[in-house]
Amino acid sequence: MAGEIRFHFDECVPFPAAEGLRRRGIDATTSPETGLLHAKDESQLAHATREGRVLVTQDADFLRIHGQGVRHRGIAYYEPGVLTIGQLVKALVLVHAVLTPEEMENQVEFL
Image 1 (cartoon, rainbow, N blue to C red):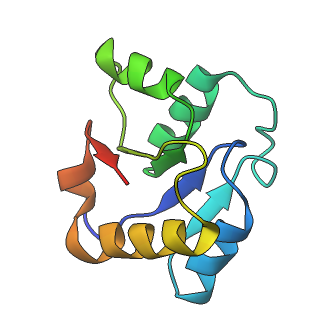
Image 2 (image 1 turned 90 degrees about the horizontal axis):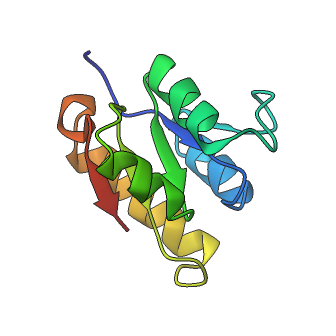
């Protein structure tokens, strides 16, 4: 897997953050855009994995799924209410700038 990190936002992440990444030339999709609104967590992660995308979430259930050994392309996790949209965008821009898709594989990056 070569190239740059691409992101997928689950439904609990403010979607304007995806637009903020796009304005910076970073590939990001959201649950509503991909027909995954209200989908189960496992379906969200499976979609992101199939598409080669790091899942962005503030849903701690994904940490449990990761802990069960489910393979994925990476999870970018942040605590609810901790980051503003601008801070989230800056954190993800940094992840995108310093990490490769290979480095994110099966890893959780705490923002």
